[in-house]
Image (cartoon, rainbow, N blue to C red; front, top):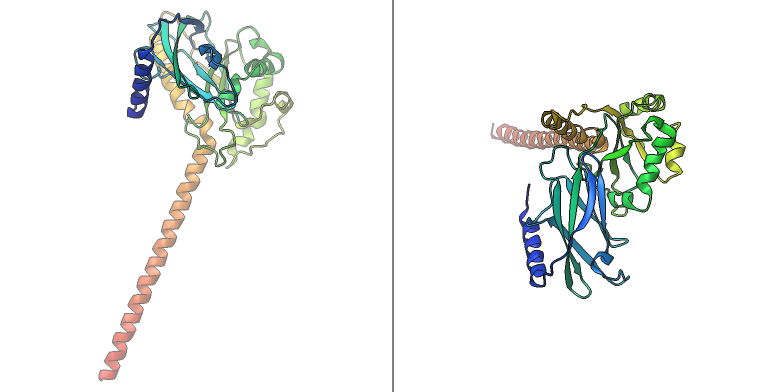
Length: 331
C-alpha cells in the first residue's frame, strides 16, 4: 500500500478531529462479490446533513486504522450533486473477507465532523467471467456512471441486443477513469475525461460481437481515432442511451479460466496480464500524443542544430574574410 506524505497528514488530521468527538458508530453493511465492480454512494444524508445549495462537504474515506484505501478501492467526488463514490473490483482469493472503511465527513458550512463506518463483506463468486468486452466511453466521467440507472442501461444494451447469451451473468469487471490509466487530461476542464469499462460473462461471445469486431478493425490502423465516429451498425443502441463509444478501444478478450483449487497462481497470472493490457489497449490516444510530442521535439532539435551550424559558419566566414582582407592590405 503506497502512502504519500500529503495524504498521510490530511488523513491523520481528520482522524484526530474525528477522535475528539468520537461516538461509537454502527457499521453499514455492503455485500460485494470478488471480481465484480461495486460502488457505494456517500451522501450528506449519511451524516444527517441537509444537502443545501450553499453547503460544501468533504468526505475522506480510508481503511480503518490506516491513512489510505486499499489499492483496488477508489474514491471520486461529484461536485455537481456533492456526493462521493467509493468503487472498485475485489480481486479473487482475498484472505480478509470483511473490510472496514472509515468515512470522515466535514461540513464546511458548520465545520461539523462526523464519522461513518462501512463494512464490505466480500463473497466468493460461483462462476467467474471467462470473456470480457472492453471499451471506452468518451462523453462520461467515472462519477457519471453511478448516476441513476446508467450501469443497468449499459448492461441491457449487451444483454438484449449484442450478447444475448450473457443475460444470466453479465457484470462489470472493471471501471476506471481514462486519465487514471495514463491518458492525458482534456485541455478544457469542462470536457469529460472518458471512462474505461470491462464487461464480463462466462458465456461465449455472440456472432454479433465478432461481426462488430471485424467491422471496426480498420479503425485500429488509423493514426488518430475520430471521436465522433458514428458509422457502426450498433451505434444506435448506445446513442439512444447517452453513450458515445470510442470504437478504436473496443476489444473482445478471452480470460484465463479460474480454478478454485489453484486460484493463487491463476490470479497472479491474471493480475499481471490485466495490468499490462489495461495500460496499453485503452491508451491509444495518449500514446499517439506522446509519439507526436516526441516527433515535434526531434524536428525542433534538428532545426535548432541546423540554425546553430549556419550561425557558426557565418561567423567563421566573416572572420576569414576580414583576415584575408587585412592580409591583402598588408602586402
